[in-house]
Length: 157
Image (tube, rainbow, N blue to C red; front, side):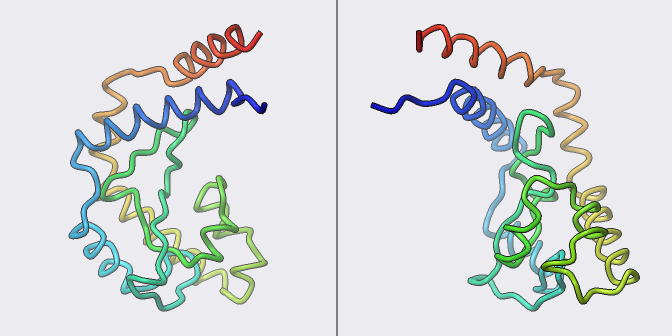
């Protein structure tokens, strides 16, 4: 019988806390998604490829994990093509836009910089106020992660 890895359990716990905080900060509604698609002109924030509501993937710019503390709220979610979503993974959005050649190979440096600026502006205008409130809570997600991971490891023995 396969047992869950303690790190997986701890990460799920942190993600649940972040989800609850995101919900308290307004969450992410269908109306928010429509505003986001409109802001990015129904294009992938990374590739510029034309998207519609069915082909677009909702992507958290600041990852929803213990290191980055991203919230699933308006301002942190951008539309992405499935290929860009997969290729970016946990990489920082600016780094991805500067370095990726597989998915973004044909984008000029000027276009890449334009996309970084658009995402940064969107984050600054819509997400940073929420992120500041989260930072004020002074929640140490790494402590939670390590505590839960340790508890699971002890139980596994």
